[in-house]
Length: 141
Image (tube, rainbow, N blue to C red; front, side, top):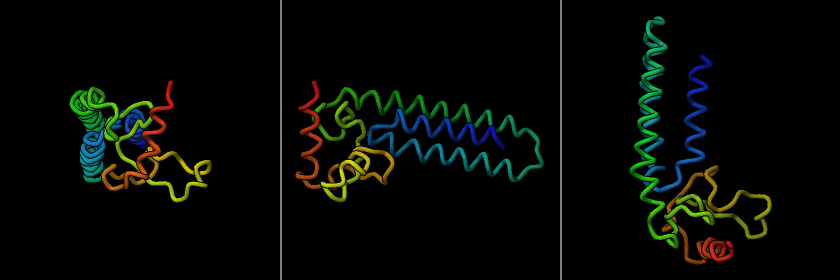
């Protein structure tokens, strides 16, 4: 159904734009996945009674999860230490990182803070790998 696809697209867009802190990136996908499992279980287990109501309840529950993550995870993360690697800033907008495979591939690959890779916390990487992010932060005007 195209309404479910639109709902999933809205979740992906919110995840791309607003989920930037470490706690939010752990909580938001798991809770929204649980809501989507509930929705699909109901859609496939019934013979079309109240499908729109089930979608509306799933959408309202995910909207509540979105507001919860923004208020409890993203806003406090923005007020924390701006030089920490787990704080979202303009230089490193994500708290989870993916190492680049080769320094010569910087043009071809996505930046280190990209959400398009499987992310890992900054403590997994050496200080040399994280130094590049600190250098970018000092270059900002």
